[in-house]
Length: 254
Ligand code: NI
Image 1 (cartoon, rainbow, N blue to C red):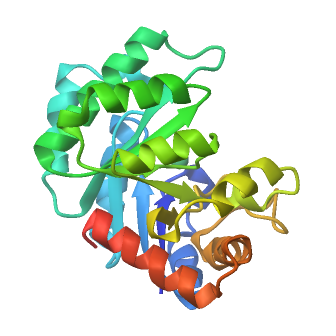
Image 2 (tube, protein in one colour; image 1 turned 90 degrees about the vertical axis):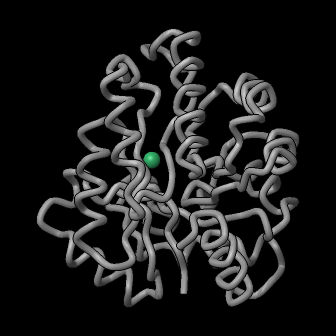
């Protein structure tokens, strides 16, 4: 059995297809899926969705792009939603230092507030980071008191960053990008990481793995990502399946 630790099943790309997507996942041995919110509306939807299906869980939180709406009221609502046992993490939360994103200072504040929220709920965090890994590691180090573990979702950083995150108690989440033809640097980083600290994700509907790149991504593509990881680590797909599933179960309590 595999676990897709990060998906967006409530995305409009899947409208009317939820049952089919879940059925296909199960046929591909992907038995558990964590669907993620990115603001208050999608967090509510993610929980509602998770409550409808066995073996679907959710993470809730504000993605960097949407933190302008992360006010006191939203924080209180996240706390209430977060008490539900189907909410297994706070996320995706983090830093994205690309143009047209909110100020760095605001992103950092929202990240720490949500990290502390996760700590109060005793749930891990799912971290999104693009071009801000230096600041991210600094923030994780400076706020160790709020650490309840988590994943660096869709990891795209250096080996040193991955190593520091692992030492701080986090897991590295490997997805479709690791299979892309132009991702040899990322593959080299992943090949050096311990399998005991890796979980799998699709981030669907985005980032379908090679050779399905450009198609609608679905949790049923997890075995393709696992095959690529098995090759990188020089182990069997069965071992990747067993170890990454254990890792996800331990971290998210599922
Ligand atoms: Ni995502």
